[in-house]
Length: 159
Image (tube, rainbow, N blue to C red; front, side, top):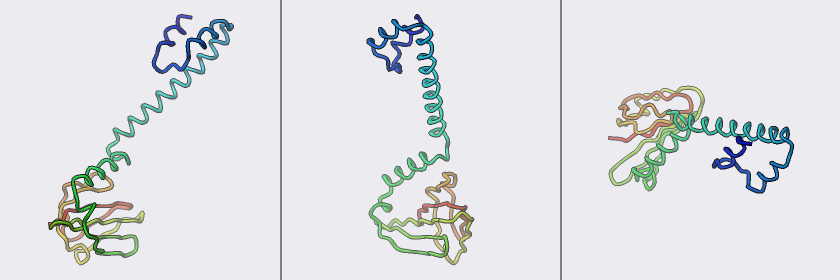
């Protein structure tokens, strides 16, 4: 019963004092089975919690991409209120410009699974990559041609 008393006060234990009194009147073998199930659930909860923290800590997780996109949207009004101008659409490629108050962004999306190379005739806009959906190209200079991996999107601040 000391095991039961130690767990009853834990913040995760869902047992009420009434249920604790009820369990004390049951045979010990039944109590062991109930607590075995409780511990199995606690181990599963801990596994799920650890797994969630690993996803958060993974640099290229969708959660981190959404956080970066939200932060960029907060700090870059071009994305929210800028005018829209299509630049290129061919196959799986979609590129458009957003302009506001003298600032311009180029958004380039590869909607397919295969890599795409964009020649300097299409990508004649020099700029700095602000964000990639892979979260690994920020700060790179984009000029002339541009290579996009499968399912990659870029947001580029134009000069």
